[in-house]
Image: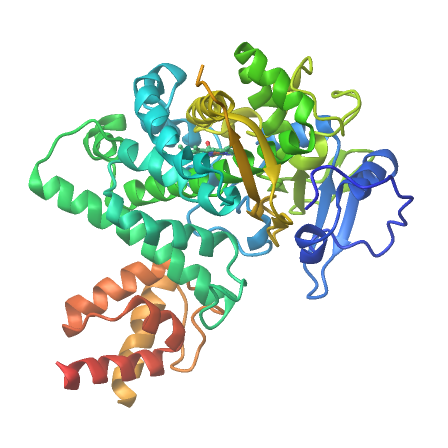
Amino acid sequence: MRLTPGPARDVDLTGVDLFDLDLYGSGDPHPLWDVMRARAPLFHQVLPDGREFWSVTRYEDVRRVLSDHREFTSERGTVPTHLGTDDPAAGVLMTSTDPPRHTEVRRPLGSKLTARAVRVWEERIRATVVRFLEPALDGAVFDLAEQALLLPALVTGPLLGIPEKDWEELVRLTAMVTAPSDPHFLLGSEAATLAISHHELLTYVRDWARTHRAAGQEDESLLHHLTSVRPGGEPLSDEEIALDGYSILLGANVTTPHTVSGTVEALMERPEQYAKAAADPTLVPNLVEEGLRWTSAACNFMRYAVDEVEIAGGTVPAGGAVVAWIGSGNRDASVFPDPHTFDITRDGAKRHGAFGFGPHFCIGAPLARMTLRVFFEELLARFESLEPAGEPQHLRSYFIAGLTHLPLTGKKRRTTP
Amino acid sequence: MGSLGQEIAELWGEHLGREVGVEDDFFTIGGNSLSGIKIIEQVTEQYGVTLSVRDFYLAQTPARVAELIEQGRTGA
Ligand code: HEM
């Protein structure tokens, strides 16, 4: 999807299909969401196969749906791709568990992913980022979106404790989970493709844990930590470890690359913002927040209404699926004045909901923020400017807002500051 | 063959908590990767045949999974 919207359009909302993949692959959903926030903040849609859902698009409503687990449960699934199929991992998988049990499931991982805990990885991540940018320094065309898909593997791999040789396969499997109907991935049916990729990811982590336990190894990795903790006096089961590992792999692999590419695209379109950040590196943390808001790589998450509920001037029936459009909430003018202006000095950029809200607030946010900060510090230090070198291409997904291709060329700084 | 298909249908039934027929489709009757992992493990234990993950999900019915087990036995 276009992150810089085209001219405002007066849209007729009757018959609008928010799950139309063309809208994201080649279209421009922002003008549509603008109209929804103004005129239909609760938008009901029935899919051709009869499944139905309600969309909220305003910032406050997005926040309420994602954070209030008493009204809106995560236990039946949170990813709109699975609309209508209850999540089999409810109560075990962190994302599909409500408080109070959620608090317990989340604790063992949470303690290892706080801002303080991830700080020890900063220099290692910096070295990785420097190596990552090297090929672009000679002025050749560099497809950032394609290359960035490997970035989380390079960053998260050592942290998780996963050997480098396995990453390519894991990246492919996580991509399969997010786009099971993509012809690149499809095996038999969409359901079979999802099951195969879930299965292989889960058994990969489970087998890692088994081998690791059997060898009696100890290290600093996150997965080792999971094999050794005893929340409530009991070690985690293989299945619990597999699901935690799965969440991390998915959470990290499918969002960080698109935030990198989307933010770089915004900067290329606005060379003056690039120059401003390069002149004053203390602006980088706010640039990162504005980039997160702007790209909103996790475009939405879903909940189910526990009881009948009033929201956004309408009513959702008990059991109704509610999709909270983060990408739209992050362009709500009542919170972000001139929302379609990308401004690295924006006040309050950090209020964005790109990491969600409430109990499920992204557990990887400190790691993602640090990775992005280091990435932009190194990028700005090395390149005087960046130029597009071809048409960007967008992911055909209504769940993940992303780029598949972003060819560019960089002009190297003569002296690296 | 018929009886092996029946055994597999029963095994699925235990994991999915319902009656399963030999021609039932795994995904239509609520099968998913979590039950799939357990079923494949149990097939390895009980029949000494390690099913390929892909073959298992693409087979999709107890009857066809039974065929895979037969092939695995004769192939082994
Ligand atoms: C820019 C990068 C990222 C974005 C935009 C992002 C976005 C999100 C969002 C919106 C949620 C909330 C889901 C909900 O409310 O149901 C979430 C949860 C989560 N994220 Fe991230 N994420 C990012 C990076 C990461 C990384 C690097 C990791 C792993 C280290 C990660 C792991 C997770 C996990 C495990 C959850 C589930 C938390 C829970 O349910 O309690 N994410 N993420």
